[in-house]
Length: 273
Image (cartoon, rainbow, N blue to C red; front, side):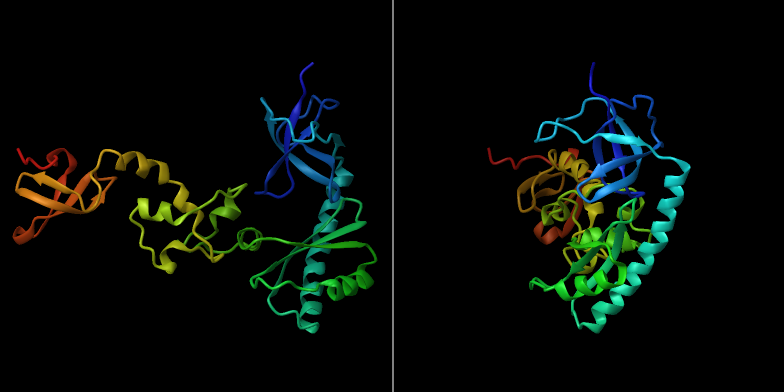
């Protein structure tokens, strides 16, 4: 019998993790389940049924323990309110301890409430001693506490807010389950200004949206001449100064005739025969 693998998500727009559901083959997308994770027992939602799963490096998947009950869902709501309280108290204690550069982003309690993970970000590269903060929180909540550092993109995703483009909510908070690598090369391929205000998001990193149309631009540029290349046009020879991949046009410097824009089909290699 083939393995029945489901993808489980723990946040509304979070990363999907694979679990074996061989003992619960009636699971459907949208069902809530209880699973054992590295941070304790958690409640998640089945986001997908995996047709051709890639076996993990250790050779096996962790299993779905059981379906969630109405009582589990109520308990999760109670812990969510508690997590908000944890964040407020932790921020206050971090301020009192003068831990500069530390941003307390969120908190996660396991389903049974016996383990607490506090997520924070640190914009500076210096190593921080968070032992005093963890000790203070331990006194307050009497549970096992761990501090986990997250990157600026993950912090922005959790905090939410308006996107740099003006959307009421950032893409990462709406639907991006995972982040893809973004590079300056993507901006250059799309003729995006390299000014920091144009290419960086609210997280201070390169905007995730630059990946959306990158492949389209790369494909379109294949049939266009490169900038600075000498070409022949209906008005004579000139040098390419800019291309517009989506319009499939080329801006050419014709010397004394000035700069003109031509459809790509009117451009050809220079005739020096």
